Image (cartoon, rainbow, N blue to C red):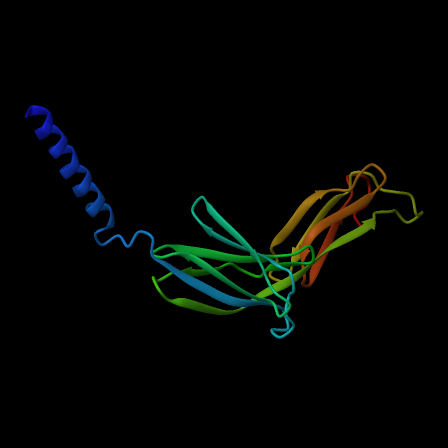
Length: 178
């Protein structure tokens, strides 16, 4: 009889826990998000872009189709950050969306800006390389985007630079500023 009461109490406890987990929590409910990745002109689709959807430690990836479109089924009740990435483009800024159960939210067009490289060589007035020259890349709002040194042969190679207008400031630790 004691054993039967313990088993019954265990069954009731598990049932209470099971109902409590699902009551109002909508566990298992899903919603969706869809959109289109486009270049900075707002029209040209970015094909085969990696779509990264992040909520805390959870990262979900997908790929855009031939029209730059994507659609994902996601857990409801969470807020996700959506970014797009390719070898030539990056999201201008992440898009934040809260997923609602049984609904697909259209985030519209997500602008991806082009990325590129700045490659060059720092030389003096006699065309001799200037080693370890200080390099600063400054954007149109006077923010320093990159700061570093040329190598021993005067070479500079800045990668993953977003499209835009920049000023390059080169300072030599020798007698001249360039």
